[in-house]
Image (tube, rainbow, N blue to C red; front, top):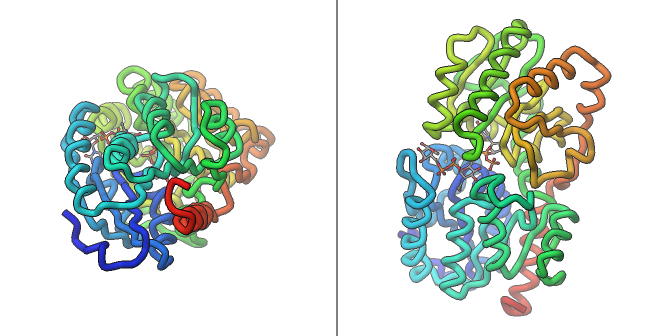
Length: 381
Ligand code: UD1
Ligand code: UDP
């Protein structure tokens, strides 16, 4: 339940909802920006759809939620977390009575947060609006989650022009869309630092560092196993390279990752890393292999080639810029493309260019400016 009384402030009440690791990373800069401004009383609700992985991020950014719904259960299904979240929001909305609710991205937390805010008749702002693959099962369930949030939202904060066009094509009014850049770049710029050395583990000497992450629901089972076998193949082919893989806590990832990749000298399986450590490791890496959304946005701005372990992406900008390549969860293709990058200097240099299609680090300021203006005009204006 709320630990502070937002009624004592004169500012408009903005409820910011975070549930999983990426939402916390991408909303932390927004929360910090809103909290600086007297126009707002900012109230942070953690659904805790993720527990440890959420807390890790909140700690790095020194954000203490005003309410924590503590929803996560081990191996939760979509039905579990969706059902529990709807009911839990009712109480906190009745207590806080926000003028506006901000949700981020395409998780269950974002979808249910938007739905509950609508039931409460609060204005809804969607951070990272307008990303689409056009395929409702890839990524699953995120593509449909974000479309449902679009249907509900009053303010759409689109990271890129192409995201804005997607929204216009679905009939969202132009005046309700602001192109802001992605707030993940704000977060990245707050955490990457020169001469970083990780705490809690030591990186052995290596000729190159390949950073790996994988967690997508639609890859569970055979596709994920194909990815893990590709990493194993590569570790054998490049014994002087280091393969660092912080493994997502989902049991469907932990089990095969440990079965296929443990006890290999040059593969480091780690628990999820705090954001500061992870972003600096990304900055030190040679190549990134990932099915993550956020990492597809961060690594290009650090000049790191990214091979995406998916067949489709809602983030075409860096693919078009040539620093991200879709390789799918395809064992042979992953091995082939990593070999090409490691063995052909020109091919590597062509991909390893810093490009910044996702923002300049000021997305949070633009979001707060927009909201401040709207508040002056009266919400929903
Ligand atoms: C969720 C999001 C996905 C996002 C991902 C980021 C949905 C439907 N999916 O997927 O869009 O890309 O987060 O990582 O919203 N677990 C822990 N501790 C944690 C976090 C997870 O133990 O801190 C384990 C639990 O057993 C939990 C399971 O992972 O039940 C799955 O978590 P869940 O949030 O349902 O799904 P993700 O696959 O993490
Ligand atoms: N990340 C992190 N620690 C890790 C792995 C990833 O802090 O061990 C960060 C990463 O930099 C990115 C975000 O988590 O900002 C991506 O989260 P995830 O891949 O879980 O979700 P997605 O972006 O695919 O929704």
